[in-house]
Length: 187
Image (cartoon, rainbow, N blue to C red; front, side, top):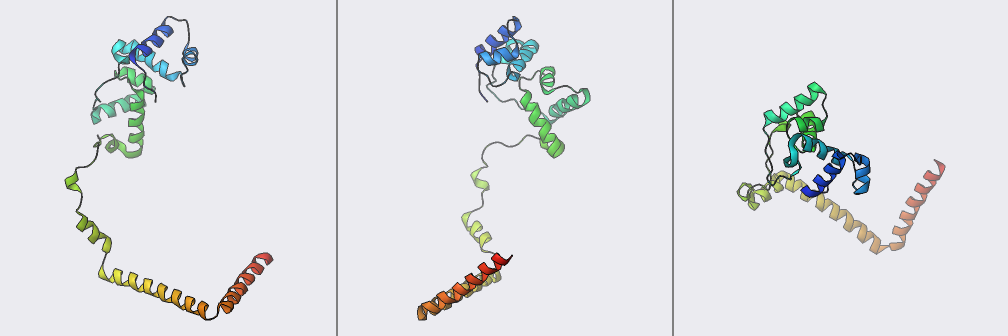
């Protein structure tokens, strides 16, 4: 999403409020993808003034109760996301859209604040513990080793047979290939 500065937003809001142009015309004039953004700016300006158009330098944390109240307002009144944002003095209706999606997918638990950033280094398991987890039990290790030895043994038998008589090996595989192709043709 493109970030627009406060002056640009105010310029478009003023042009709209003067009545010279509609949302669609302004969007075309300033090569904006959607007229919805301009509509949001106008509604936020009407309810909050110039402060509604300013980009917040800090991210505001909303409580679960506030998020739930906003969602209930929309569900009870049938208000749009934009109307709800204006009603609750928010300048980002897309935030309410995200809350609604999380609420529908996860219920009230989805509205809890999530931890941001990387987990601390001290909580990572040591490399030794990771190696132990990957190994598995001794029995599983031995079964895996037996399987690898069986595969290696079969490979070496085929290699020895090929070295002793390469023509017989080719004839045998030609016959198999020929039989498979005939089956496919008859299907």
